[in-house]
Amino acid sequence: MVLLGATALICMHHYLVTSGWVSYTLVTQLHVWLRPLPFEASEWVHSRPDLISNLGWAVASILIWGILPAVALRSAYGISFSDLGWRKPQNTPWQVLGSCTVGLLVFILAVKDLPDFRATYPFFKSDVIWPDWVVFEWVYLGQFIALEFFFRGAMLHLLERQIGETSVWITTLPYVMIHFQKPWLETAGAIFAGVGLAYLSLRTRSIWPGILLHVTVALAMDFISLLS
Image 1 (cartoon, rainbow, N blue to C red):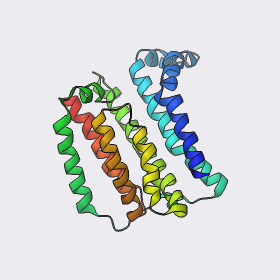
Image 2: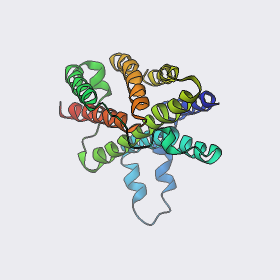
Image 3: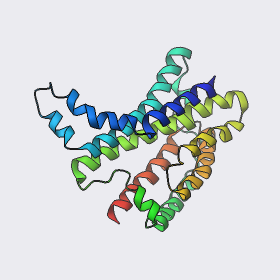
Image 4: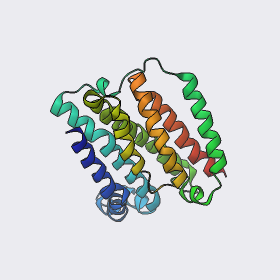
């Protein structure tokens, strides 16, 4: 049941979000839907198609990776969020976490000028830093929290009850696959990240150390690319 539900959500994200359907719909229709409002929201939205497209992707990702599974598991099965990793971490290996963060930052500095990375990052390319780029980065951060909740929280911890540490490898496979549109080095790195973040979540019984690492690296990639 866990795998069936996870597969449905992964397919939903691919065909509705990664494919661009949500972003396209918002860019073409949102300003029309806002026209009845008594202020200039419609014009503001219509003048920022790139921002609306990227925000649509991020918000839809938060909905699919975070809100939908959380509501479904809580309402249908009464599962506590703390049992899905939404709790204070225990026995966090801070030295290992710090070393991994430094190593990944060095990796970012080494690859930031490669053509495929420059084409991908910053994820939202905008000459308007405030408010457009800053607003997007905050929502982008929320997307990573939802992503960690889905793969290293709900999916991992529910599967662990049934198959133990094999859940690490089961959750890593789809996690790597959602990186197929990214640079190949990042996709290859997602193999190690998926395994490492899963073991980190199982050890600490929490998704928060993984969120800290994931968010730090992702925002650093965007920020360094923006300044390059």
